Amino acid sequence: MRKIVSYLINNIREHLMFYILLWSLLAIIDFIYIVFY
Image (cartoon, rainbow, N blue to C red):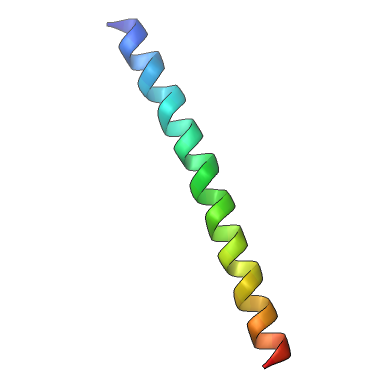
């Protein structure tokens, strides 16, 4: 049971890092778009 919980927590953490990376990339693209256009 504990192994499943720790596995889920690790999975969620990895996905969170991925989503943060994705959103920061989108924010940078948005910023560049606003500045240059």
